[in-house]
Amino acid sequence: MNLLQPQDKKSKAPGDTAEAVAARRRLHDRGVTDPLLAGVRAMLRVDKPDRVLDAGCGDGFYLGNLGVAGCGVDISIPAVDAAARRYPECEWIVANADRAIPYSNGAFDAVMSITARMNVAEFRRVLREDGRLLVAVPAPEDFIELRGKGRDRRERTIEEFSTLFDLAGQERVATAAELDADGVRDALLAIYRPMQSRPAEASRVTMSLDLLLFRQKRLTYSGHYG
Image 1 (cartoon, helix red, strand yellow):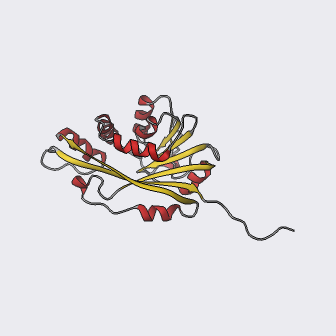
Image 2 (image 1 turned 120 degrees about the horizontal axis):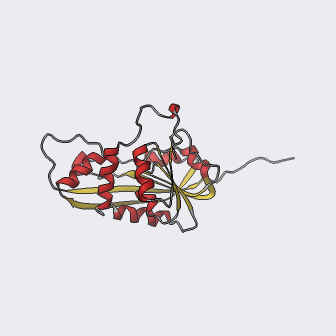
Image 3 (image 1 turned 180 degrees about the vertical axis):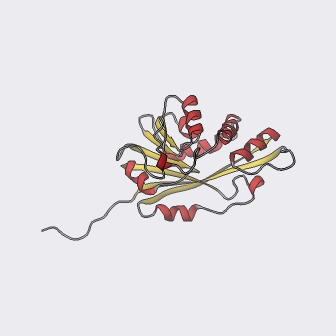
C-alpha cells in the first residue's frame, strides 16, 4: 500500500533508490548479513503470535526473516516493492514514518528500527505498554574498509530515547566477509559511496551494528487526590 502524500516527501523519489535496494538485496542473498540478522533476532526475542513493526524496513530482510506477523513501513517505493515481492506474508506500506506511523495506538508488541530514521514519540505511541523497541545503529567499524571508521552513536541514541524509554540491554554484533569485486561494488552502492575511478577490487569487508533494546519508561505520579 502506498500512503505517501505529496506533503510527506521532499523529492519526487524519496528514500533508497532502486539501485541501492537491489545492491543490498544481493548482499543479503550472499548470506554475509546473516550474523547481523541472528543478533537482531536474539535480542528482540519475538514469538510467532507477536505483531512487529519495522520502521524504515528497506527491502524487508530483517522483518521478513523473523517469522512473525510483521508490518513494514518505508518511504522508498522501490524498497517496499522489493519487500512485498519477497515476503508476501507481511504487510508493507509506503509512508513517511518521520511524520507519522499509520497504525493505531498500542498496535505492536515490538518495534524495530535497523539503521533507519527514528521517531521516538511515534514508536512509543504504537507500542503496547509492555512492548519492546530495538534500535540498531551502525557501529564505528561498519564498512570501515570502504568509508573509514565512523563515530560511536550509542550514547547519543540512548539520550535521544531517554525521555520515553529506558535502556534494557545493548550488544554489538559484527561479521566480516571476503567479497569479490561484484560484492564490493554492491556494498559501495548500498552505502552510497561514490564509485572509484578504478574498478572495484575484491576485499574483506566488515559489517557491524550496535543493538539497543528499550522498554517504555514507567510513568510516575506524585501528589494526592481529594
